Figure 1 (tube, one colour):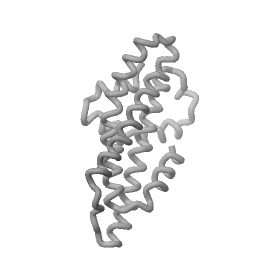
Figure 2 (cartoon, one colour):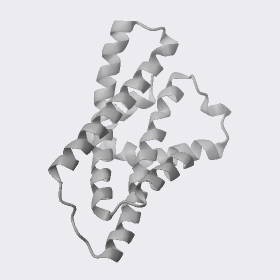
Figure 3 (cartoon, one colour):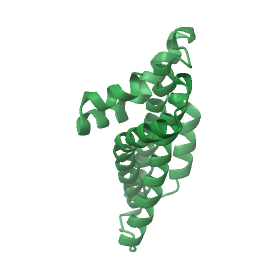
Amino acid sequence: MFAIFFAGFAMTVNEGLWSNAITLFCVMLAGVIAVPGGLALASYVIAQAQPSAENEWAFKFSSIWGIFFFAVMILRIATDRISRVRMKFVKPLDVAGGILVGLVVSLMLTSFSAMMLYVPFASGVWKTAEAAPWQNQTIQSFAGPMTSTIIAFYGQDVSNRITQR
């Protein structure tokens, strides 16, 4: 989780406030689109492929991630086309704000990644009982922001579809 956080931050640290704000919008909206869209796609793919019960989690996991990547790409291309002129800020505000918003972007990307770890946990493929308490706490803490966003948009039932088999 920390590697994803630092990689996300490293990709956004040199961007300005405006670019990182647009990226934050894209990541959050893509997460909101990916979860129900990925679950619907997973249901269709599972019905067509009819995998064994122990492999269904992989279809759900890859469907949600596929929709997420596709949504981020489409949203980023659309926002780059719509917002051709970069908004100007005072240089210190642009630098400091860019770094702060970059931290939030990397937090939301890490949060989505942590939330997706609950798919193999719920299927029993990865055992949380074998993990150290700090590992479970780290994943739960990182998953919090995106999980809260998903619950705010769709309610607890969509979140439960990720965390339960």
